[in-house]
Image (cartoon, rainbow, N blue to C red; front, side):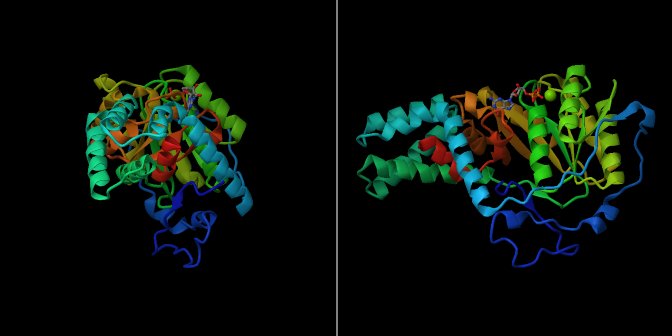
Length: 373
Ligand SMILES: Nc1nc2c(ncn2[C@@H]2O[C@H](COP(=O)(O)OP(=O)(O)O)[C@@H](O)[C@H]2O)c(=O)[nH]1
Ligand SMILES: [Mg+2]
C-alpha cells in the first residue's frame, strides 16, 4: 500500500529520524506517543455512561504488513487505473474535446459546457475559461494539445489547495467524527478507513453513533467483527454518550484512532444539526482537544448541492475535511472545482468504488490526469 496518511510527530515528544522518508512507506513510521497520551487525558466530567449499557463487540491489535516497494508501486498503478475508470463518466466529455480540435470559440464553448455539465459550477468554469484564454494568448499556443496541457496545469493549481493528508500520531487517541446526509457513504468510509489505518499499524475503535437505525449499528458491528475492530454501541439512546464512551475506552486501551459514525441528516433538519453539535461538545468533555477531525462525507452524485452541504455542516461543526464518495457512478466529478472555488475545505479522501482500495487520498495531479486522460 502506498502512503495513505501523514504521520506528524511532535518534535518535543519523539522526533522522526532525519533520514526517514526516502520512500512513501517511510513517511508513515510509527512514533511513540506514550508521553502525549498521558498529557491528553482529561478528567471525566461529562455524563457518565452506564458500563453495562455498552457492548464491546470485538477487539484486537492487527499487525500491519510491511509492503515491499514493488508491491507498493503495483498498488499505485492499480489505483491510478481505478481512478481513471472511476472518473470516466465525468472525464468522457472533457477528454474528447481536444482531439484534433482547432483553438477557436467553438472549443471554448464546448469546454464551458463540459465543465458546467460536470458540476464545476459557474464560478470555477468562468475562472478556468478566462485563465485559459489568457494563457493561450500570452504563451501563443497553437496546438490543441498545448491548450489541454494549459488546462491541466490550471486545474491542478485550482484543486491543489484541497489536497492535504490526514495527519496521524498527533493525538492519542486521534478522534474523528464523521457526518453527512443519509446514504452518502459514511459507514462504508469508516470501514474502509479502519482497514487502511490498521495496515498502517494504527489500532482503531469505532463508535456506532447512528443510533436512529438498528440496521446502521448492526452494519458497523458486523463490519467490526469481521475485521477485528472494537465497536462501541448501545441498544438505544444518545449518540453523544456512545461517542463519549468510545473516547474513554480508547484512552484506557491506548487505541490510536477513534472514528465516530453518526446518523445521516439534512442540513435543514435543525434539531438534528443541533444533535451533531452536542456530539462534538460531549466528545470534547471526554478529551479536551477532541474531536481532532470532523469529516463531512459527500456523495459525488450530489453535484452543486454539495456546496450547500459543505456550508451548512461547516457552519454547524467547523469541518476539518471532506470525503467525496461514489465518483465512479457520476458525471458530476467537477464538483471538486466548485468546492475549491467556494469553500476550500481539504478533501482527505475520494471514493471511486465499493472496494476497500477504491478509497484513497485525494491528489490534485492524479485527479486531473484521470479527468483529462
Ligand atoms: N459505487 C460506490 N458506492 C459507494 C461508495 N462509497 C459508498 N458506497 C455505497 O453507498 C451505499 C451507502 O453507504 P453507507 O456507508 O451505508 O452510507 P451512510 O448512510 O452515509 O452511512 C452503500 O451501498 C455503499 O456501498 C463509492 O465510492 N462508490
Ligand atoms: Mg451509515
